[in-house]
Length: 348
Image 1 (cartoon, rainbow, N blue to C red):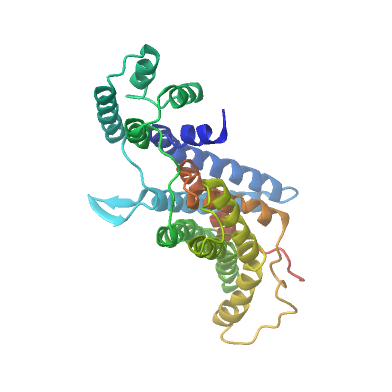
Image 2 (cartoon, rainbow, N blue to C red; image 1 turned 90 degrees about the horizontal axis):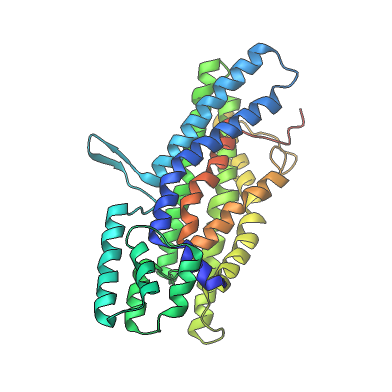
């Protein structure tokens, strides 16, 4: 199976619908596993009271972060009133099936299709997503024409070709999708400290600073870099300096922007903002002495690993919809780290 056929397979509306339905269970499972692992690692050699407080704090932080990630993705309604709109589009199974059945009926009628093998595969597509072999068969067996294009636009859509305006809108949506779990983590962390009696200005400041770090270094500035690189690429296309980009080439351009703006500069900017704005706020405007930008929080291998969500973001901006349901899972880690106020470079 070639890469284009694989792309058609993973972006099937019915397959995406199934992905979306699995996200809440996957997120709760990931959060639970992460919490158990973190509690075990950080409780070694500690007394029972420390372990008890660690379990309580992790449970509250993970609960808040998970709830925030799910609310960000799915929206929130209370008594039928919309409080928060969903940031990930989710079409119902019934709506997708109805649309696909209408498209299949129209195709069969317009082409007078008689091939039993193709008819059987289209029959499967009326109620479920097609497997890779079935996708490859109908792509290669049906003659290229307008009727095929219209059918495939519905049951096997190509990745969206987003223009600069669309990408700007997507950047805002994805940045908000990443912000919600981080905010949820900070709130959960402060609540957890209050419950176990460890709440103080320093801990609150650390949570907010880590929230800044996670959001600016791992989410927002990476999105900005992606947007800048795509605007440049689109400008070069308009003057015919480069050829129109395929989704995969567009994804590569996005990754270049993410690396240069987000990964390289994001941690520096996030730390600098924390020192300039958050420290004075929580130290009664007293000047806090810092030996350097990375005095409290330096980039580490785990932070680099967290940038896998940027690869997912690049995929979404390149038009690959199948990646989108996984974003709440990836942003969860950033929210959790904000909730515990992670700092890795204290000198005392």
